[in-house]
Image (cartoon, rainbow over all chains, first blue to last red; front, top):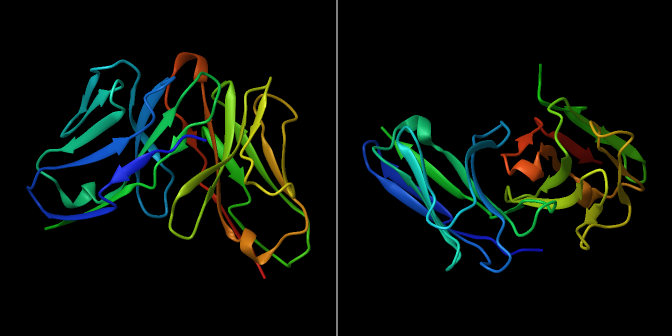
Length: 112
Length: 113
């Protein structure tokens, strides 16, 4: 089972602040890296799926980068809003057909 | 139409009972999963099944067993339930061959009393 680490564990920012989180994963036999947003009492919902070294993806104010050689991904949120408050999960798979292994998540709280 | 649906949403049962949680996906995905959310909200993989191969997390007690009657279903059977089995269980599916995102069910909150 892969070891996927996320930091920080939790984060509290003010509305309008920009922030970023880190996900680290084993770089050997890398297959895919996913980011999910998980709101309380809901199911995780996908933000990005990245597979290639140097991938950068963007959705509105949220973006992500991927470095498969060194085994890390960053998630950025620009101009945080209260509705961005959630737990952000990253997950990695190291070969086709195996399960996504999730990190423990970064819980973001945005105050207005 | 719900993409991944789990039933029941809540399940309260006594220690020692045997119970099942059902999961169905209508996305045509090739792989289904069961995850357990622990007390710290950490998603831990239990099983991965892609219609050819079942991958089991070796830390999962053998009282837990997945059953897949067809590609669209992966049910979770739990024998001799214990207090420590109380958790939220999530089913998910993905199309691994095309490397797209996983879709999750709404979760089943299991309480063993």
